[in-house]
Length: 185
Image 1: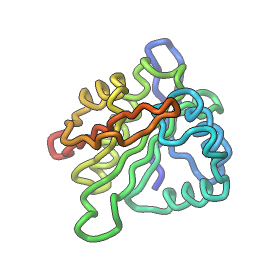
Image 2: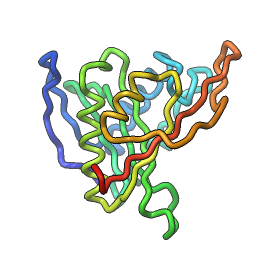
Image 3: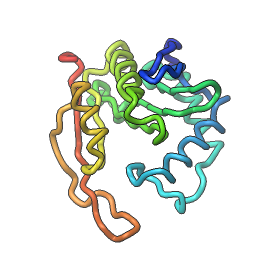
Image 4: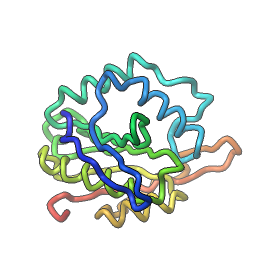
């Protein structure tokens, strides 16, 4: 499904459009995801994992647009994609339909400006409207800014996957598992 488009103003005065990316935005999504993979180790993918597959992105965005539950919240500054967030059913089986999985990325130069909170607020409201009862995510244990924002938005830590990520320098980072029970949001 596509969310209702809205305009937000960041504290620095920049005007951001929040809307759902569609298949027509696949190249912007591809470039955004490749850029964020280069900016920080907090993404699951490294640049040397290779470029994102454009056709697969197009198919995924079309699938999200056609879904009655899954959705995207994408942030555009003018025509540039600066934030990408998706919520999808954990598994398409009856016992899992109440659970949504959330993934999010923001270009580094737009972090610490409130954009993540605007995107997350929009996503949690839409998730609740779409019938999700809880939204789950995983975050790098050393991504303190994201963990703070998630906690501020009602997520609670409930577990940890030790050594979930092995960085290029050979060190490991744990994954913190978080949940937001939407009936309390």
